[in-house]
Image (tube, rainbow, N blue to C red):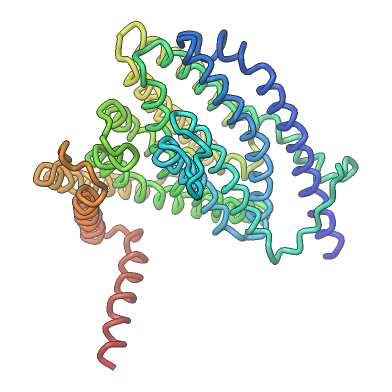
Length: 456
């Protein structure tokens, strides 16, 4: 047991050091070549002043790959030992850092009367860096109590480390596809109206929050259990657990996407006090991506649990080509502007999930049984009713231009959201969806438990 633990810490230390060295080199190269990269590859359509600002922002954000790599390995260590809370919190904290940069840093940073930063769009870049550092700190806190024995060494003779390295290229390329899409999108957005890049990037950040909260958190927490089922040779239990997890994710993500669509004006207002019609429209187009990207994380983890990193990679390679083609066609040929970028994202998100699930059903013919399909149908019906209620709520309490303050908009947003989700829970209960039972049980315990305490 002691030898196994020592080997595990050697693998962990080696991965932290290896990823840190690789990404540090990448960050340095980005800083050095930021100017030509921005000019010829990323955003050739920017003005001279815009180009100079973009280069400065790129150099500030260049530290992110280095920080993310370390945080990712630390999160994997915690997942391996069954500690998931900090892994789930870390991506949320990252998004909070970006929001802080967008809302506050853009107005300047004043410390004890000393103006240390004048503000502007560079505040968003500082928020991104703040978020990445906060994510690393939260991830590192999760190591407390594990007895992690870190060494600044690469244990190249460790078989486990070599095994991880053999799986790393395919999975890294798969996850890196999003960055390629990002480069193309920024390139196209730079050719559109002023402010398009900012609006699109901030809408993307907003759409990632529910994906991280639901899809990433649940799939990361479930990954060790799925791996354990396969290690025991229990494919039947693996399929049962995976079905249950996919149902839970769909049950949570579908109504969330519906509510975000109807309340997008309020949500954007919380980021930009004056509101932003373009950003709200882009977010509305991305709600389909929210649903399917949330499902994608769980579906991809199922392949990773079977040590199949190639299937998600092949699908991603095709998807990246489709995304780029759609983005160019919708944005330039059909003149849809930034909305074309968002619809390309949503279309490809649907494609990726459908293909992954089709491959999964072919490999495991009994995976998606009649009960699973029926449950999905019930969830769609419940979400439709909740969507009607949400639409009525927004019609009765619309977001107006006069709702310039947080305190005038937030109460209306809260009422609409609570009522809509409440109706969804009620419909889920009426349709006998078991996913709602733990929520109702917990709510009943909190409510009546407190009442019992009062009466006693």
